[in-house]
Length: 344
Image (cartoon, rainbow, N blue to C red; front, top):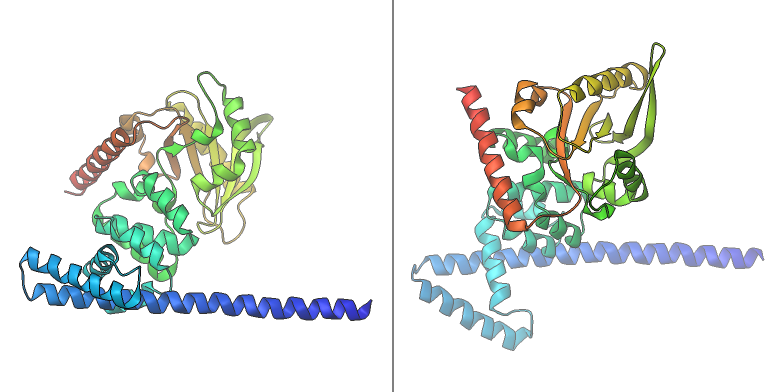
């Protein structure tokens, strides 16, 4: 019996070594190939820039693709060469490419390359690195317009750059990079009429999907958390903890539109949590009020932007993506203009 255990242990150890070596080899191959693609794109870019005619560029790429395909087989067509060219065009600095190739696969990079906005592209790069998204998850995040839904998108460009640099250099997340508006809760399966209790129950049943929508650093702690003040009991709908923010996150669910009274209720919960549950070294608790709708004027007058209370809409059914995109862009522009006016 002892010999069998020893053999199994030996097999397991060697299997682990082989799998680890395969992963390391895969990373090394990806890194090498990614740099190769950049070098090819950079060379094509340099060659084409010497002759500004667009037709000349098309001819160069087509002829090169034909020659490479004949020599090395499939995978070296015009489409791939245009990916390489785009890569060198978007990331002209070889030092940035050198760091990027060790952190993201070529498939990740190809997906990110075609995001036009520089800040938006940087957002997805840093979040992808931080949360180690698969390419599938990255595509889902882009398609769900995560950047536009994240609070940071509504801030001035300098703030966005600063927060992304903090994330890049120190792995430090700010709340504006974490909290979103709206949240897509279409996976809950709620239709037509439902109560706040139904909403809460559906979230608990679909807790994994709920956390995926919120972000991988959220950890569930409690539901209907009892908060006792003097002789009166209150019940907080959901309590989470965010690892990187090092903060408790209190979530209240509201079926209707946001009301001013919700602010006082959440402030009470946050102060109780700060006094009774916050541990040494943790940051102040954050409150999130999820509601079916809100007035931006209410949010502004109550000065919630300067507090630890966030208010966000939730959608149980997804609207048309084009309409949603137009709405987000308009909201981002309005928010940035308002912030700019305050600073002037």
